[in-house]
Amino acid sequence: MYEERVVSGMRPTGALHLGHYHGALKNWVRLQSEYPCYYFVADWHALTTHYDEPGTIEANVWEMVIDWLAAGIDPAQATLFIQSRVPEHAELHTLMSMITPLGWLERVPTYKDQQEKLVDKDLSTYGFLGYPLLQSADVLIYRAKYVPVGADQVPHIEFMREIARRFNHVYGREPGFEDKAKAAAKKMGSRKAKLYAQLRTSYQEQGDNEALAAARSLLEEQQNLSVGDCERLYGYLEGGGRMILVEPDVLLTEASKLPGLDGAKMSKSYGNAIALREDAESVKKKIRTMPTDPARVKLTDPGDPDKCPVWQFHLVYTDDKTREWAAKGCRSAGIGCLECKQPVIDAVLAEQGPMKERAQRYLDDPTLVRNIIADGCDKARKLAQETMREVREVMGLDYK
Ligand code: TRP
Ligand code: SF4
Image (cartoon, rainbow, N blue to C red; front, side, top):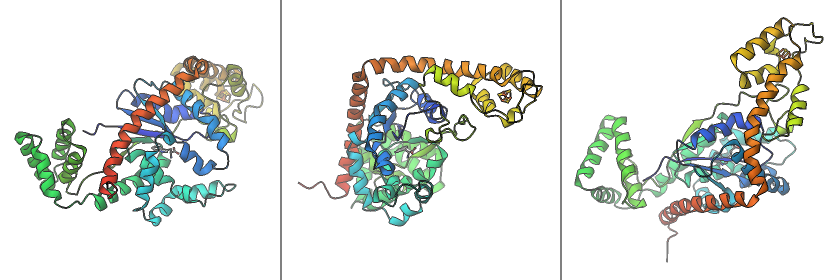
């Protein structure tokens, strides 16, 4: 019934760079063949911090989608869409806000951290406080199983798990729940209903997690149960009420191993980034002028790769043999820094070549991108609407 969906979003606040690629995007590309993946442009989330520069968002939405496609996101496998074109996200956000304690939002660490970091922005807004709740709506509306994000986002996933639990606790306790759950089980046929009941008992009485997993996959296979009955059976299994919203798990994305040109975190605002599809001449120039171990003033001064940001690029981009050559040549002053940088330049350009090629199709014909997004929005919206029907019903909004 609930497929094992992956949902993740990115804010369109600037051109994507190689740090994004080696951090998040490569992971998205890998996941698309393993799960049904829903990747979206989080334009509303961009507005929570960039509300005074709408132009930035507009300029970056399509460029970001092209960056995704360039990186190898395949629209035949993954569903790509734009958050604001599935307005149900906003509806769920509003409805969930009714049961969201203010203290929960105030305690999310990014709230204070970002306010302290982005001092030139007034982030004491309602929208910014609600950032994690909007993010919760993004994920919960698809009843996602996994959310691939970096470590900084883990508190947001924990927050949405708590919101899902609270929602189910408040709205999943319908009158006659147990009888309805039992009636739902019968609809699977008596053999499966019996198996379900046995597995449920094993889980609830002996804490048998394998029984829980087996019962869940039994439910997953059911094709002809209504959404409401599925919610009852998932909830009854675990000892609660109807499971209207599903608690997702984090799929932790390893931090990008690729720092910026100066060795600090790669970021457009630090001016140390290489854009995903940056022009080759500019890439060459940027790497050639990268700072190196300051001890190597003259060619005859030996250096230490561990004190050089170029070495970090070698670790991501070159093979063992090249690295050995570079490290040895550096320590013995046998090679110059420009020489050492050449294989890195070659590898970055080789990585970018196919990306630029893939992007060119879309740059030449922007309607291709518009169509991919239109299809993705339709597909996402259908799922979102299904969840919203349930949410409205349990919140008493289904009156005629
Ligand atoms: N907050 C995320 C970030 O800054 C972006 C985001 C918005 C997101 N909604 C999401 C990520 C839902 C995962 C799932 O990276
Ligand atoms: Fe850096 Fe290479 Fe120069 Fe050593 S030789 S300082 S590793 S660029």
